Image 1 (tube, protein in one colour):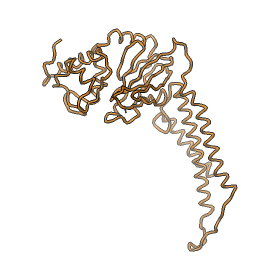
Image 2 (image 1 turned 180 degrees about the vertical axis):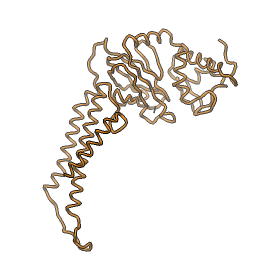
Image 3 (image 1 turned 120 degrees about the vertical axis):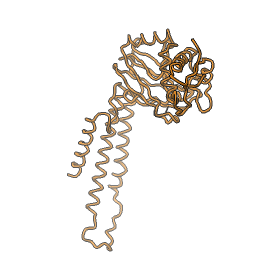
Image 4 (image 1 turned 180 degrees about the horizontal axis):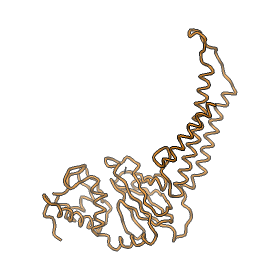
Length: 327
Ligand code: CUA
């Protein structure tokens, strides 16, 4: 009776949470086969451990009621009860069997999480995901690069090589809707994959990687394959446009700097280095003071794009702006 009551309450709580969507006990809704498997395993483990919890709490309550003092005076000792082989065996064997069953279920599902489904070369893409302090950089097969937003084709297996530059720190690439977290470790290449329908998904860094860890988010735009091809072709053909510079500024610079107010780094508006490719490339590639080498592996075109954008930004400042470079 009591067990049924507790189990019933638990079911109601779970059902309520499930209806509430991603805000409660359940993972965010999944949009890739590996993420489905993770979500399903989560539910299996949750129900399994929920049942164990209910059974143990019910036994506890029954024992407390059954062996309570009752009318016996407080000063009188209760009866001494010595070992019960059956009970001890039960307490050792049952948990072992339960844990073994759980391990078996998880191992059985593991290949569906780690192994991408086989796909023809035409139906798969490989991108490199680079974790930097404090932004994500993406490299595409044709050499195109984007920062902060990963564009990938819909309904294709997308393989991700997850890395971090040698002079950076460890980050963790996690797109909850598209699979589990994968470490981005300097000097190592880890692998992840997903296969999703068109849509927008968000990622966060799940390793505490210093001051701006919490702002290290990225967007994953899953688009029609033709749109994906158009994007990477255009980006590879013109890697130093103002739009590229704006993306770099917003994701790599603006995480720590604002134009007019010192934040983690100094305010930028009056900084003459902002408009000089030679000055800025030195700072980006080597870092300076407490600023990490945020652009340690950027191409010249990427730096030119940033300077184009920062020059425009500085020149559009109403007051306090430097004359900057012309051109
Ligand atoms: Cu990168 Cu936390």
